[in-house]
Length: 426
Figure 1 (cartoon, rainbow, N blue to C red):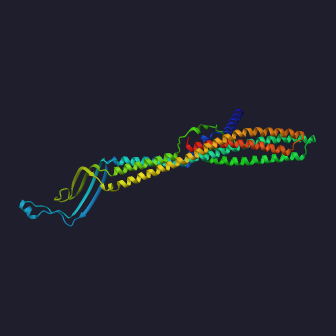
Figure 2 (cartoon, rainbow, N blue to C red):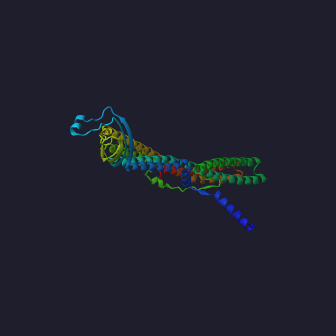
Figure 3 (cartoon, helix red, strand yellow):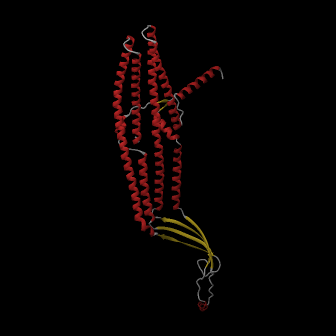
């Protein structure tokens, strides 16, 4: 590789490294990555496979069923024909053996089961859906964890920006006071007071960066992404359209609906189980005796026909069992109603909080404007000797605090909006 190609390769590597470190992420991307990275999501495929196996097993009920049986018995007595009757007819009637042997292979084909297999498949589908929705509820909780970390990092970034502005103001005033000292207007103590505030600002910057690093590590572990100080987290736009969305798509509601469907499927199975069953069968066997009990030795035989069966004992408790399922379903309805009630209370609280923060932000802009005017006036007075450095430091800190409060309120507004989205899954 010549020198030109080496230089080009190094430049490409540097550019690639910079683009990797300066990657940009959105909160939606972090939510998707957290979901995909969470170990529990792997259970989705297992639930689906289990459901398919159960459905397949239920369908096999329509296939011919084979049964092999064998028995060896000894009887205390057997059917006998009087010897005199044989002599009168001029025939010899053999004596039936008291030890008997039989091996039978039976093939049966279901014709009508009253809907049992169909109900079993409905129960399987409902149970599978419950497991999926239950898993979805667990995975949905990840959104709130991502939101807290994501907006926590955004807030720390805003604090770093405001702290940087404060440091710049302190540097400007430090240079100004140094010039005033040279002209004999200010003293060293005034410069020391500014230097103390500069040290405090540096300390705050170090603390904020340490906190941000911790938040980045936690978000990295949650999403499986490499999130560093260089990663740009996109600040979402303030979208207030969620205030007008009253529908609720929380996975808990889908879980409760799936439970109701399960109880309905169980009622279908209960009804079908108490209906008669019809099937066809054929038996082939080999035994001693065969179907003709008066033959000696082993002989083959077969039997075929239609079988009708009806276990009516299930009807005794059917009404009570159906009532129990109705009670279970009503319990789920009450749980759903309670969830919606509590969820609506949280929604109204979050909507009121958004309106309050919006009002606060309007006041923040006016407070910052006034604080800036006060700081400028104090800076002019300091040069004229009518204000002290303590006055300037106080006004600098007051302006910085006002800026930080506005940044805090902006992040709080965004966080509350996303909490509202998360509360209704909109």
